[in-house]
Image 1 (tube, rainbow, N blue to C red):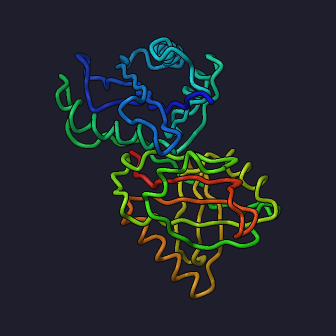
Image 2 (image 1 turned 90 degrees about the vertical axis):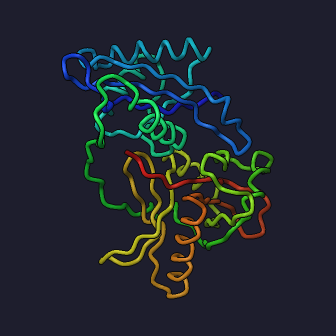
Length: 288
C-alpha cells in the first residue's frame, strides 16, 4: 500500500510588502498504523505569493513535493471545504484522488506548531487569529438500513494493546501512533464494537467514508451517537433512548476526553469473532 498525504493550502498571518496575505502549502504524510515512526514522516512546506494563488501553482508545488518524496501518494486528504475546487483540480491534474477529510492529525499539529513557532518570526507577521471560513455543516444523516449493525456496545481497551494493532486480522482499518495524541500506554481507550452478519460490506462502506470520529450528541431531537466522516458529513449511528445506554454514552465521551480525544470503532460478525471486518483508531481534533 502506498502513502496517504494530508494537505493544507491557505493564507497565513503574514503580510507581504504589498500588505497582502502570504499563502502557504503544507503537505505531510499520514501515519497508517500504531507503530509508524512519526519523525520519519514526509513533510513539505512552501510559501505562495498572493498573486499566484491558483490550482496551477498548487499543482507545481505538489509535483515538487512528489519529486522530493520520491513517489506520489495514493490519495491526498484536506479539511478546508472552501478550498475544495482548487485542491481537487490540482490533485486531479496529477492523477491523485483528493478526499475531503478531518483525519488530518499530523497536519493539524504541524499547523499549530507553525502558528506558535514559525510565523511569528517571519517579516510581516500579524498577531491574532487567522480564522478559516466556517461553512455550515449539513444535518446528520441516517445510516442506510442495510448497513445498520444488529448489535453494538461500548467497550474499553488499554492503550498498550494498540501497539499490536498491525498484527491484528483486519479487513478495513487504519491506526496512528498514540504519541501523536500524547496518550500514555497506561490509559484506557474507549470505543464501540458493532456486530452484524453483514460485517464486511458494513466495514467496506464505512472505510469509503473516511472516518473522522465518534461523538455523543444531546440536542432537542434527542441523545444520539454520531459518526463524523469526510470534511463535514455526519451519520446517526444510534439513537440513545435507553437510560443505561445513555449513561454509557456519557461515560464514553468522558473517557474520550481523558484520552485526549482518542477512541476506536470496530466491526465484527459476532461477539465471538477473533478477527475484525473493520477497525479504526480515531481522534477528535479541533481544526482551524
